[in-house]
Length: 250
Image 1 (cartoon, rainbow, N blue to C red):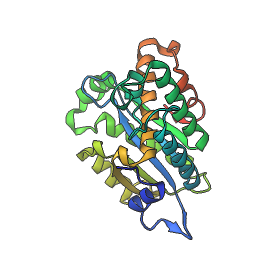
Image 2: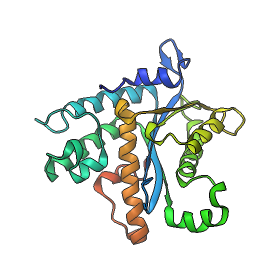
Image 3: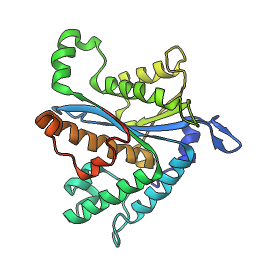
Image 4: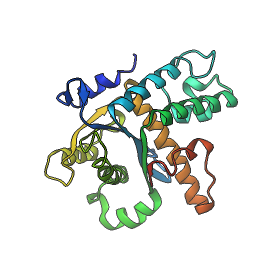
């Protein structure tokens, strides 16, 4: 199954959002990370950009899916974890080729001009300080990370030429009651976020921007784990450095 084009995705998420062929909004694609049991960190990461930036991103990304490294066969989708550890579609790749593939996809992402964004939560601290006090009445760490990330992005969006309207896409695999409730609150017009025009769940394999979001979410997760262990002395993966200082990453 081939990924949808960015224009096709936009028509699914916000079918009335076009004037003279131009999408009058920013689009944000987000992915979860660390939501497996026992994870020290839970978070959300992704990308936000204009129609032109996403079209450029889509073209670059699909070219790399067709040939991740010179001479390699096509892959169905990017998966950061699989590439780093040689699993899934990257199981036949050596370490050098996996590192080179990561560098190529990262460069496609950064050169497209889309902005990276992430928010990570210390899962142990969350359980001890929040869940222990409020129990199940409190939103999950994932929903909180998602809300906090959107909360930080919205003021930035109001100053962009194609803002302030933002349409949001989230990993279909994380379609849970608490996330659907948050989506409803963000789009019902009664909150302080009237510019969130839609919140759509979509399969990562069908949307190249969500695969880019996987890269941001996963790299942020790995760095957050190291930060919990080493503090300010935490090593920074070369593939993560490009996002620091140029994005909206906490």
